[in-house]
Image (cartoon, rainbow, N blue to C red; front, side, top):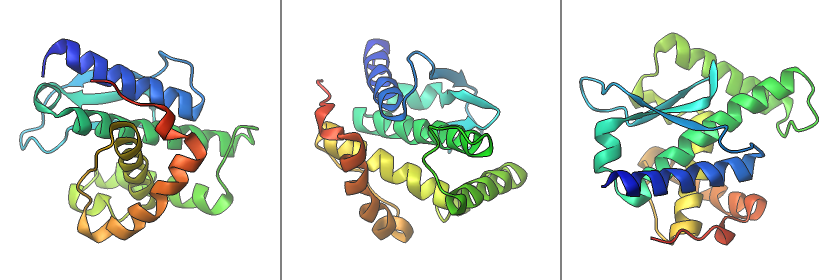
Length: 177
């Protein structure tokens, strides 16, 4: 993938997340990270840097359009989750989560930090299912494509996809190649 294509795809993903989650662009930024030894980590976010998405340069250069947009939207959803946790704690009027969701996400993010995010266990957590469902919905409704879902969470993710379309009107954001 060319640098121009990466920029176009990343801009689309960032603007879509910013619009859906009420951020003012360019609040979300992509920072190139050092590749991990196994090459397993494509991108990640951190609660203490709630406007940055760290992405592997090697992965950025080789990802397909749907993979790049999907992964960046997955990570963008994590930024939304971090902001919702902060807003819940401060009783902010833009908070959209309830106490049960707050407690679950807060616990999972804390465990993820402590455990240093075991990749094999990630997708059993609600924060990951939520982010994966948002990502799958974006790819489905904006690219008219699909992502391969992890077998263990496929039904949970599929159940959430229509709700994301309803809430964010994703089909109005058609990506043009």
